[in-house]
Image (tube, rainbow, N blue to C red; front, side):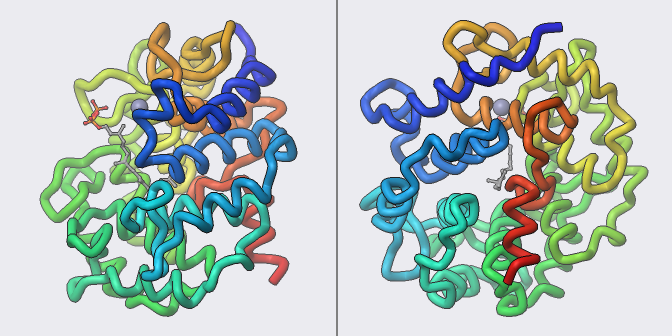
Amino acid sequence: MGELATEKHVRYILSVEKRKDNFESVVMEHLRINGAYWGLTALDLLGKLDTVDVDEVVSWLMSCLHESGGFGGNVGHDPHILYTLSAVQVLALFDKLDVIDVDKVTNYIVSLQNEDGSFSGDMWGEVDTRFSYIAICCLSILHRLEKIDVEKAVKYILSCKNMDGGFGCTPGGESHAGQIFCCVGALAITGSLDLVDKDLLGWWLCERQVKSGGLNGRPEKLPDVCYSWWVLSSLTMIDRVHWISKEKLIKFIIDCQDTENGGISDRPDDAVDVFHTFFGVAGLSLLEYPGLKPIDPAYALPVDVVNRIFFTK
Ligand code: GRG
Ligand code: ZN
């Protein structure tokens, strides 16, 4: 089996973070804060976060902050809970959470909780279990979880649980590995994992591994490196990682590398991007691939960063 081309991936991520005029950055323009989180977290897992100019990133990040307390995806863009979590995660990576007005960001997130316990993504109101996870993860990092109605939030997430053990984006929505990560992650952070049928969900999740060793996001779909995160982090949180073949999944991820120019793609021989590079490296970290920092499956941040958030204040 080939090996992880660490140096090449570091160079690839640094080049994407810097370049502002290539195809990927144009496509990613509105997602720049998310891109920063993917790239910088991958760099940290690879042990190379110190190659980044912290002040430059933090000052750009702060220019995406709105009066409302939410962050936009880039300078001049509307605030959304999706970007607010990425911003908070990047600040946590750099141990710079003290640059934000925590109460203001908290109020923005609190304002998005609905009467039934669900969360909207922004002022326009779309509801999705992704936003429940984001609100819970973000407030937990800010030590402000008690500012929302956690009991109602958990009840709403459970109302999105299906007969197959999985979770969807709203009640009755089809089970999808991405939504399962969100629901299981939110339940893990709120200490509610006992409400999950771990064997039933574990069975659905481990069936996501296909012949090539890769994981898909739902039955009959193609494998994709990002599910090495969505599925594997969920299996880790419910203690069922041993239900898939770790070796075969490692091989699948390694086969998705561009060994010449760095970066990881969704499937072998496809074009690389920073999203799949992060999820490939994060998956390998969960698989305890040598030389990588361990990542926390619920917070999607390196374990040492999570420990610093909860054990040093
Ligand atoms: C902190 C890691 C982290 C995440 C923040 C935004 C978010 C919370 C979670 C997103 C969860 C999610 C829904 C992931 C799925 C993304 C994805 C690959 C969707 C593709 O779905 P389809 O149906 O593709 O287009 P398939 O693979 O089913 O063919
Ligand atoms: Zn993908």
